[in-house]
Length: 305
Image 1 (tube, rainbow, N blue to C red):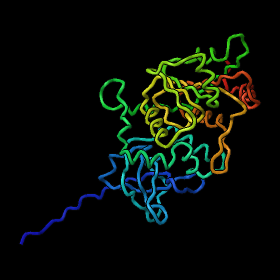
Image 2 (image 1 turned 135 degrees about the vertical axis):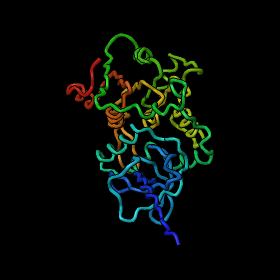
Image 3 (image 1 turned 90 degrees about the vertical axis):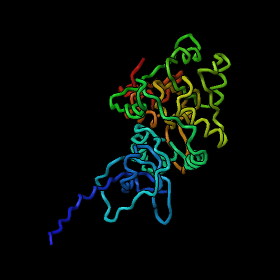
């Protein structure tokens, strides 16, 4: 009888990822799960998955495709809900930095950038309104739009308006290329539009008060980069702005904070983290700078124009 030889193929090493569940987190850290082999090639940073969390299944955003802290009995993700990255890497880095800075659980900061209700609406529509970005070269997909913004030396430019020109003219003159304009409120937007009517083919104006349906449409419009110019309030800072190059922030010291989960967040803090984690060309325009802005200008954090 001939001897029988058994050949054993080496077992594939598991792919471990880090995620932020929407329903909870531990301080400013994420949780580790593993990905089954058949799903490993479909995941990327920022995409949405379902994970077992506590005694239920919860949404989660992938924040890293590797983990150095492997739990003793790791759990597997349940499924990939969408391979499209809803959040860009610069947003994820800003979320963790804001969590550490404010001593707030990271899933609360995540909800500023992407609410669970919006995710449910996107899933209800099967994510069909979100488009894979085209490649600048015309070949393949343009995920580089999401991945290229990594700069730790980016400076915020500051313009203190003291001249004779109207402030609305100053704002208009700073709009160049694909630009986001963040006003303090709807009243400031209305005042600007009276003097500078928009071209609806190139510019999108989003009011601050939105229904769930309009929030969904606004998210898709910004995500897809449908217009060259978007005019909105501070809320725009928390959206995926990967299609855009310039951010104009109209400073108003009376509208400097946002409240959520009993915490106050300064919009300028979020803007500063966007600057350190991306290569956006960020400019603050102000007629009456706040004390905080003047300090940033004096210490060289802001670059004076």
